Image 1 (spheres, helix red, strand yellow):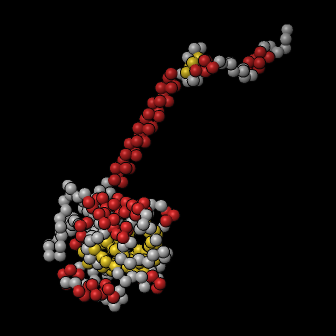
Image 2 (cartoon, rainbow, N blue to C red; image 1 turned 180 degrees about the vertical axis):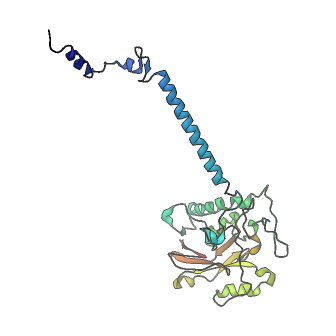
Image 3 (spheres, rainbow, N blue to C red; image 1 turned 90 degrees about the horizontal axis):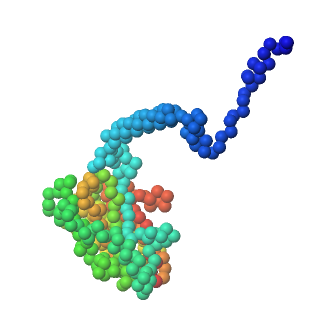
Length: 309
């Protein structure tokens, strides 16, 4: 009689048995255990139920958070305005046309004898002015300084007042008398504090314009363009502004009115030099527009270059 008394069989059964080999079809569905991909239908049902409840709760929490955030947002006006906003209270001055080709930078280069180059720049202006040409369905009115102005009024920017700076005239580019358009960046609620009298630091031509204007028509953001450097200032003998050398204050404030368009001033350069680069600086004049001509921190002005062949 063995002395193990059956203990050997007990120890033998305690060792792990190798897993039963399964074919690929048995991995997909094992008829012996009734499993699908290693799980029973009950286990799969519990798993799907768990994740369904989990994602439903997650979607509800996300919806609550979004609703809480959107309740603080106003569709008509920004939450942070003027001094409290990142934009601040100092509007920038911009020009059109601006090339979409970054390698051109701020240089307006063209040959007035080459129609393709003329069409390139006039096409950019046309694209920008297309909203100004189609005002059907917009609640706009023709404003002037003798009217009572409501802040919610939207005043028409009349493109017919841009003198020779029109599409029919190719904006002067085919004649070597190119036009650019000046605009102020929109800042919600900003109201200009205008100069109703000339100041000594203004260019002489602007001082003369202000002094010759009627008192009621001096409620404008004045603009002036001049050579950026000394050599360029000699070329500025004949410049015209349309419809005037300023942006009337009745276009402000901008309050996100439906149909609102930024007012423009067309500037025509009648005698730009041929074959040499001319640096131009245009500036906006108002008591609450801070000016800085720094290359790194330019404020209240814009620079660009003309190169005409």
